[in-house]
Length: 557
Image 1 (cartoon, rainbow, N blue to C red):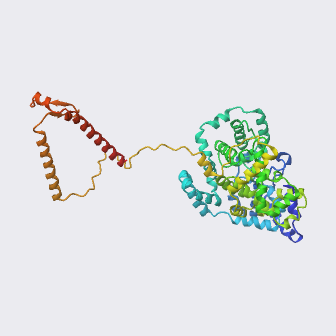
Image 2 (image 1 turned 120 degrees about the vertical axis):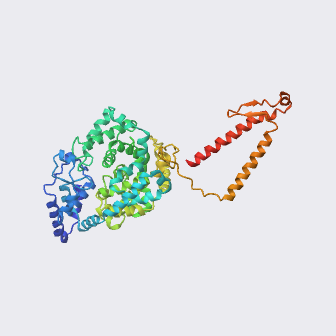
Image 3 (image 1 turned 180 degrees about the vertical axis):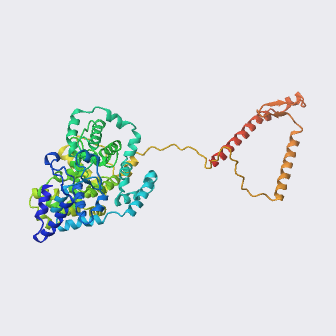
């Protein structure tokens, strides 16, 4: 943050000094009695980029109309418990403090216009309500939408998930909802287990470093830090061979901002196992392979940036490790982080690659920008203190969507880099599961449980209600007379056929009894075949009758 602030001041010309001073004065008036920055407590990169930018926007907006800004602010429970009750909270949950004033003083005029333009690009309330209605329909019929209209889901994720439904949508997209249904009570079991002491100590030391300016995590021992500890400890028990990696903490913290601890745990499991497998293993081999993939793809996207990094002999791990392992949660403004995560959960790791390529292209992709990057140190600082313009939400999302990098290209390059790795370093020590590219691939690999179909009548009537009358048209009297004549003729022929023999009388139970009018000699001389066939014909008739009644019942149902 200090390097970014120094670079911003150095880039301001003398003609802009008065305008910047005026903006700084407005920001200082809005954030009076701002929080002092404690470097010992927060660490070198503790303040999140999203918190800094959101605070700047709030500070710039409070000069002319403070009433509207107060409507968007609130007080967090953890911030009140930690003595920050007088601080306002922006719509993302970050505390508005002195960091916004410092950021406003360090920005140039073009960056200030970019931030003000970003504020004007917020989604109107009517459009937001329409999107909420569409997303509710999708979430309530998720399997149908994923099977038949997956492209529509992808387009709506690119437009941005409504904030009120973002946590629920992330669970459905990542498959965390299915994992939770398949493992009921598993998180509670892990939560009540003691855990490995070697991981518990490391996790406790990292808790206060995760978004210390967010209302959930500002208080030591607050509910946010407690849930974060529970989620990370549970993962070390769920995957003891993998343990805990510090880059998992910001991932889990972002999830906890949008959902309860149990749901956040299963989403974290999906990210570590399906989206970014092997990223958090002990040797970090997967992230090294993806660094080589990113550098190879950069040659096609921005040859200028690729040539510069090659000439400076800068390893991709020096700039892309935090980008990829934290999914840009510590790099981008918070609104851009949420939009990137929306697309990431839907389309997979290719979104992370696209964001990294866009940042490299616009930071090092021109001769003018390379003038200030004469050595390795200057180049690394250029990538660590990116311009707010290229990280702005609308600009970044548009560039990411239009960048032609596909899953097939990533997988082909992965095979190439894996072959080179095996030739130079041998086999991988950590065999991670195959990477799944997005929600569709995860759903196909792990389909959710389907409820058994149960027959239910289409028309339900109360027990005492009379049956509705038939709507069949009455037959004309001529047809009725013809049917009666046919029935009388048929009954007469049946009587004639039965009169001479009268050998047996068939009861309802299907038993044959000898008639008293027929002599026993005549019965003995008759062919026994009709006697045997009578019960068979009767049984056949009864089976057809039962089948017909069953078919009529199924038709009704």
